[in-house]
Length: 403
Ligand SMILES: [Zn+2]
Image (cartoon, rainbow, N blue to C red; front, side, top):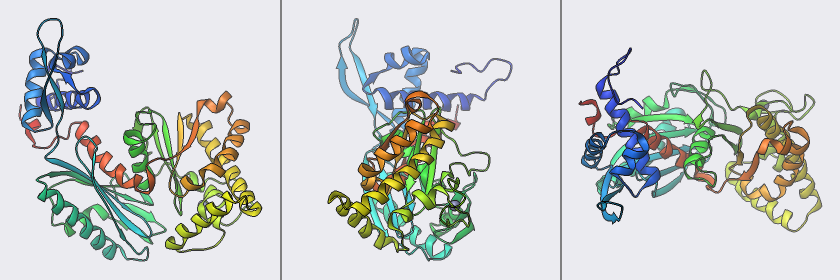
């Protein structure tokens, strides 16, 4: 931890203070209720610095004193918890048929979850107008609750570059679209940062912060929407690759003679293990939900044809997951989207394939599980990304820039 500005490359004092504020904020998030002395003991910051940083965080209403005391040797201490009541983080997920919006407070508690229908055939302009409309309503609701919006992150199913430009979102028919910039204009420069990211990336962040494997440092989220993509977290951080296009496991070829894929190639993971392979017909997104329910009903009734299809899809999925496990050795691969209701029938075949295909014993310790976050995972992940920004030092109030 940097606590001094001396050294060969002196850090800017304001940066040091912002970094240390973030360190204290993260400590309170993870260990609350805790005392100033706990923070000093664990972070290595001296007590006077901790007192000053805590006072700053209390001023910004990011942290508050609970009034609770804990008897220690010496005198009782005032305990600190996250406050964040005047703040909200917003995540939005654009999918082919719906736009979902989630708002959370600083602690990650959900404040609202809204959904509206959305036509995948909408142009970028219509799409941005639709997303802008729902965001305006969320912002206005947050204003009524006297909450300041810390930021907005939008999940888009497609290739998003590191600047947040949508390079291609095949199922939306969008390409080379600056959704963030367009949205800022539609919202008339709302005064909070807008980020755009791939849906699987944001869902992975949601799992890392809120899911059954929260805190896992090596985790892969596999989206089971119309497309199949992976959000990859290694060593605790989302890995986007050089241009932001990592995680395209859906277009790794399993069989050169396999079925045609929407990408123009053959035998991709998406073509063999995506929802299209389960349903084997072209359906509108609204129909898919109904069809999946029917597949679940038939599987429960031991329908031989449906069970055979799910086993075959599970085997292909297992081949794809084995590639991830051999390459990345994650602690867990989390199946999301439409994979969740089908998981009881897919997982046995997935695990069998992994047992024979992953070189490391016990599949390298890699578990495969169904997501518990539901269809809003990527929207929730948008809020998680905003909270990550705060935790890494982008604090509201701008006081961090003042030494
Ligand atoms: Zn493909």
